[in-house]
Image (cartoon, helix red, strand yellow):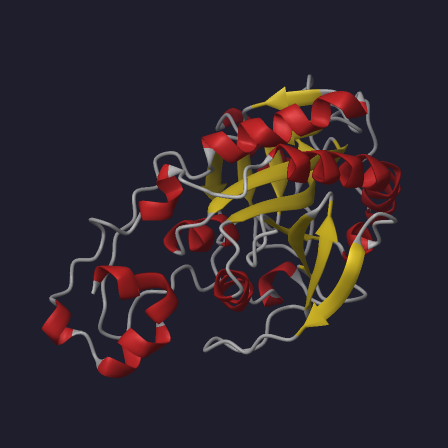
Length: 287
């Protein structure tokens, strides 16, 4: 078995209570960006090492804006993870994306305003390509892993991330629909873009919990709706993750692993030593 996790999962803390997770232990990781949302749970699933991180902290104590995504991604990178699957709730902005179904989006729209969006700065400039921000290869593995569960899965769609913590107004929800958005949530950005800067494959398993507030014949979204669907889908998500771990090869040669190859603009001799040290696990192979 590889020393590095074949997969890292970011989601709710209840997701990690796998009956089949063996030799589970918690790992506390320090990062230059502060503490991750929670300790990382490491264990063996289907004979392979996996890592789990509770995005909102143990007991869901962090607002979406308070989630330290830089620390979370940095911590997972530092333990050798190269793939991340995000498991999250979302609202539907389309009639055909129904509550209880699952969406594997292929596009993101970042509508947040208050969150640190990049590891770079402090003397080093990098511009990553983000035309296709989610890993196509990993997303296909997730779709394949979901097939035996019997879930209704939508392949593709645009996920708009709002700041939160409040839900949308009807005016906002209808505007997002006019823009062509498919689903709405509060967690994908900047998490996905930070994973991309860290040269990690990233895919989202989005569980549709409601129709947001635009649907005239459905009740507006509530926390009760979200929790109900997530609780119903916990076992489904666990089964899919276990199947995904079985499908994934130990090695990872996806193009996501080389995103920074031509992205760093700063002359090497102009990068401060402290910054080189801080971002060593991201940029060392290019400097």
